[in-house]
Length: 171
Image (cartoon, rainbow, N blue to C red):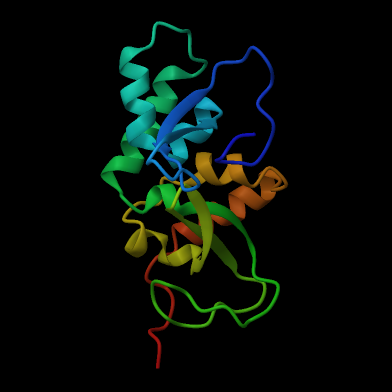
């Protein structure tokens, strides 16, 4: 299973393996966490670029994945981007501006990596991405982790990402 997306990694496919401390080891042993190459580029950019620099294997979309990994290093919060969707309620609070995320507005779900796991960590308005993540170049990773979004959804999300600064400040 891929640690980045939770989906199976097909047999005999290229994968990224990252050795991390085994939380269940009494003697400080290591365990290997596996990722699809694209998930590794998005979620574990340092490990991905290190492996990319040493492998002779053919990696599909190598240059695009290297670009996404560098983006994740340049913008340290980019690997936190998980999925996007319309808020089903108006109860969530944006981690960036601290205002409520109104029902039916675009929001981006975030995850934190700690102790070898990706844990949910709240949401931001799509319009707050520029301030919080310091980039709006997020559509490839959102499309990857939100495969249910249609082309029309992605277009609407792109508009929401570009609308930074249009939200009223919290009162």
